[in-house]
Length: 192
Image 1: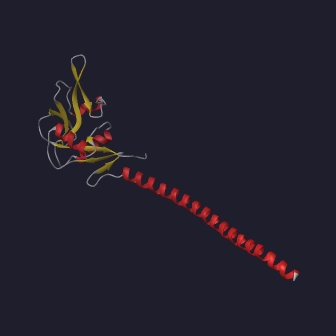
Image 2: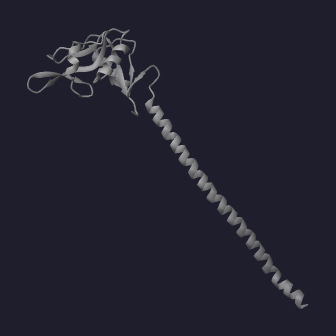
Image 3: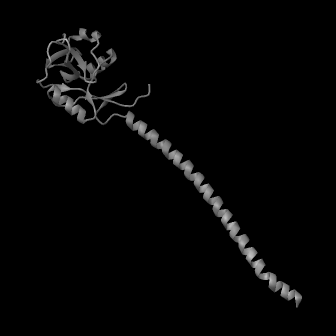
């Protein structure tokens, strides 16, 4: 009878202990699975961020359809004529501006790009300076380098003069009310 009573007495404790051990094992497995899932999610998140950054970088480096890439910019010549101011506004609506030409290699590229259109506006215009004189300025506010004057652009003498490039790549001045083709330039990310 004592054996029976002892078994009866400890039987619920054994049952509770077994159940506790089983629950602890399940908890340990769930905790381990949770940790592994967190690690996997972290790795996947890092890979996703890296892929997103790569795609974003590649997207910023691409030119829109119909644009031509050269150096760190994309170029576009719309198939319509406008005044200088209208041309600039249209380029700005495209997230660009009229082309700025600061190096000989860009002048050659623009000349080749413009070869079929004839005369195209570039982003150069006279601006009033203190001291009763005008100066040629690019749309990005940089001054005209003297090395480009040899291409046919006279000294700035009036405020309404704007510049265009002809088929030979020579720059000429014109009143800003005439209509011409124009060259838009959009800067893009660049790895040199």
